Image (cartoon, rainbow, N blue to C red):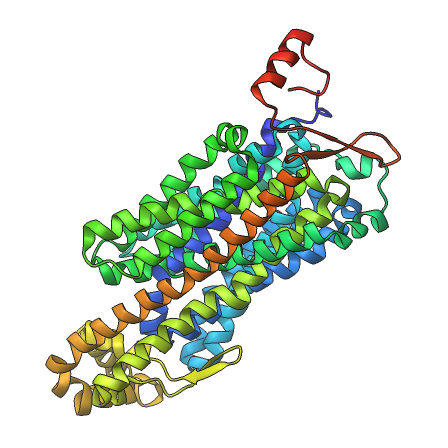
Length: 529
C-alpha cells in the first residue's frame, strides 16, 4: 500500500543524507583546502574558519529545527535541506569570480557562506534522521543509530576517492559529486510517507520535552558530546592534511583507510553494546581516541602513522552515534528536541572550537618553532594577517600562497602570470605582488627555506594533534564517572514511554545471561524485536 511506512526505505534515505554530507565535507577537506590556500592565500587558521563556519551552521540549525520538527514534519525539513544543498554548491563555485573581482577577503566570505549554507542543509537532515531512526527501531536504538551513521564515513571515502581519481579536473566538478546522493534521497523523500514521532504519538507536550534539560545527567552528556564534536569532526577537517606531512603521498590513503574502518565497524555496534553496554563502549572509545591522537602527534615514518591512525579510528568510530543512542534510551520524552540538542552541541563545538582551534594550534606551534630557530625564513613567509582563537594570544601563521609557490617551485604562479600578461590583466591581479615577492625574496632563498618550511608545517600539525589528545582523555574520565554512577544505581537501564500520558518505566536493555535464559523459558514478550 502507498500509505505504508517502509522503515527500510526511510533508513536508506536517511543514510543517503549522511553520504551527501560526507562527500561534500571530504572533497573540501581532502583536496580543496590546499587548492584554496594556494589560489586565494589563506592561512591554516583561515581555512579552519571556513570549515568551522560550516559546522557552526550545522549546529545552529539542528538546535532550532529540532524545536519545530514535530510540528513541521520530517518530510518538509528534508525537502528544504535538499534545495539548500543545491544552492550552497552554486554559491561556492562563485569563489574564483569573487576573488578576481575583490580579492581575498570577499572570497573568504563567499566560501564561508557557501559552507555555512551547505551545513545548514545538513543540520536540517540531522535533526530529522536521528529521532526518525530511533523511532523506527525502538528495540535497538543504539545499534541502528550506529548503522545510520555509517553513512558519514561512507561519504568521506567516496569524497576522498573523488579527489584521488578526479584530481586533475576542476574543483567545481569534484565538489558537484555530492549532489548525486542529494537527488537520490530527495526522490525517496517525495515518494514515501513518514511516521509521527514516538513522543508526539504518546501525547508528550513541548513543555515536557524541554523539562528533560533540567536533568544533570543530560547536561553532562551534552558537555561530553561537545568534546566528541571537537575531537571527531574538528580533527576530520585536518587529519589528511597532517598525516600527509608525516607520510608524504599517503595522506589521502590514510584518510580513506580510516573512514573505511569506521564504516565497517559501525555495523557491528549492536553485538558490542550487548556485551559491555553503551557507556562501556564510550569509555573504551575515548581511551583509544586519546592514544591514537597522541601517537599521530609523536610518530615518525609511514608504518607507525598507519598504526596510529588505526588506533584513532577504532577510538572515534562509535562515539557520536552511541551518545545519540544513550540520549534516545534515557530521555525518550525529549523526542527530536533532546536528540537535536546532542547533534547541535556536537556540531557547534566542532565549528566554533574544533576546526578553528586545531588550525590555530598548527599556526601557533609552527610559529613558535620557526621564529625561534629561523626568524629570517619566517619573515619571508609569514602572513600579513593575525589569527586569533578565544583568549589565546594572536599569531601570524605562514602565508598559504607563498608556501604553495615555494613547494610548487613557482610553476603554477609563472603560468598564471604569463596568462594574465597576455590578456593584459596582470596589473589588476594580486598575483603581481606575489610574483614580485618570489623574484626578489622567495626564489633566491628557496634552497635554504624549503626544508625549513616543510619541517615547520610537520611540527605544527603533529603538536596540534598531540594537544588535541587531551579532549578524548577528558571524555574518558567523564564516561568512567557515568559508568560508576549507573553501577551504583543497579546498572544502565532504558527509559520507555509506556502510555499516552507520557508516564515512563525502565527496562534492562542489557540483560544478564540468566535473565536471557528466563526470557527464553517464558517466550518472547510483545516488546521484543
